[in-house]
Length: 453
Image (tube, rainbow, N blue to C red; front, side, top):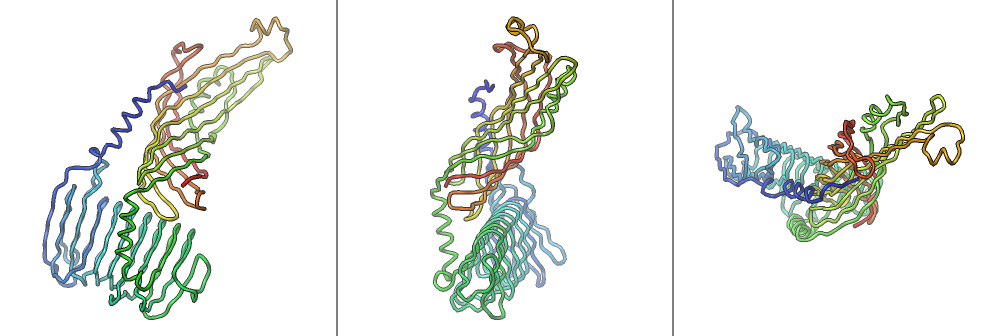
């Protein structure tokens, strides 16, 4: 059914994932401007890696590397730093913003990592997809990432904020504190563990509190672990985490596979439109399908394969004739993915499937009554035709995997399948003309277990 050359698939994959297509030529941008007392800073980026640093200077200094360059606009009370839409071919720039230590700052970042250091003013930060690293922040702070890890650290002698909230939807929250720090800590996780609050902590395994004092620290993770370190580990936590991150980046190998159920398939509508007018029964509603997947992972790149399919049958009776319709379809191909988030409990990846899809179609007609051998052998009372329809298939997709046990995860993926049958064969690869179009294009959702490491 899949008679298309794999050479085309690999060429498309190479072009789609070529680093030259993703990374634009770098350029430097610098900007310096005084900041009046009472003015706040707002940083708004769709895609960028942002570093925000508090200094003793009374000016704002911006250094950016990459495209597009930031746009700086000064209002009456707010200085805004905006990175325009970078497009699919660019990953966004690296932006470093140095501001007066006590200035208030707001950060809105769509995709990318955020690092904050040495701020003493009000801080509000929201990241869609990316990690947040925070150190030596002494004023009220509220930071959240939808998908990513949050890490915060304070050394001995640092002033802790009166109120600080660190949260993530999918990812881990890790905090390093000096041993003598007096702070009230509350921690909540939907799926994960809480460690480091000590034996005096109260609450349940998913919601705990401990400590006392006029400083409060609220930690929350939807899916992920919460870890608190104190003492020497806490004093050097930021350095330790950076080293662990570099160690993980050097080499990470994994792999595995599993099965899933996907839905829906839409090409049955075109199939019914072509067969029902000839007296054949309709094959029913949108169906689910069973499939399997597997991949090998090195660092953040995955290569593997996936496929799914289903067989639908229907029969009808009209006068003295039985009619049968069988629709057996399938899709599959090579998968290439990049893991944008990797935490202890979950990971999120984006990629694409490149392959083929098609259907085996069988139409049959027979009389209801019993017949003789001569009638059966002569095909006088039975007619059957089988055709094969196939075409190239492609599907950009996102995959979320949540770890349940050390070797068992539950995962789901969503993608938009492009597949239209363009090649029809009948009886020993004879071409078939004036054929209907089977269009399976549309959203596909799937979920199932994954076994591996």
